[in-house]
Amino acid sequence: MVFSCFRDWASNAWASELANAAAGEGVSPPGHEPSGFAFADPDYVLAILEAAGWNRAEPHAVDFTYLAGVGPGAVENALAYLAEIGPASRIVQSLPDHERTDALERMRRVIERQFDGDKVAFPAAAWIWRAVAA
Image 1 (cartoon, rainbow, N blue to C red):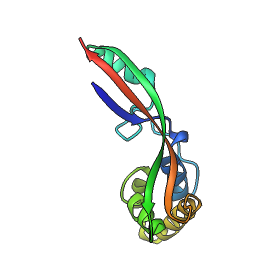
Image 2: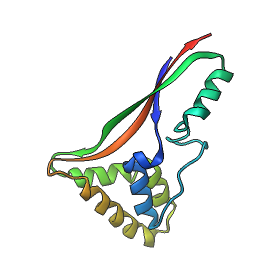
Image 3: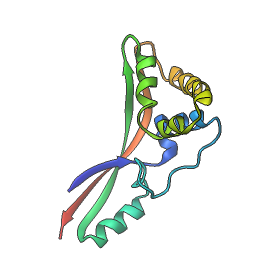
C-alpha cells in the first residue's frame, strides 16, 4: 500500500497561515480528528497500520509546492478555492455574514504574499507512506 497525507500543520502554510488569517487569531493545530491533518503524526499512523496488520510501514517526508492559483486572476482564484476547501474554509463558513468579509480580506493578504506575479504557491509538506500486507 502507498498513500500520502499532510505532515505537520506549521509546515503547510496554505492551511495554518490561512486558518489563522480567517480566524483573526492563532488557531490550534488539528489533532487526530477527521481532517486533512489527521495522519500528520507518524507515530499515530504507524500504530494504526500495525494494528491493522500492515508490515514494514515507513513514512518518507516530501516537501512540495501547493499551487493554489495560476495566471490571470491567480489571487482571486486561490482565494475562491481556499475559501471553499481546507481548514480556513470551515472557519469562514462558521462566521456570521458580517464577519466573513474581514476574514476573506485577511486571507487575501496571506495569498497575495505567496503570489509571484504568475502563480500563488505555498510551501507544503507531506508524508508518503509505504506498507506491505501481512
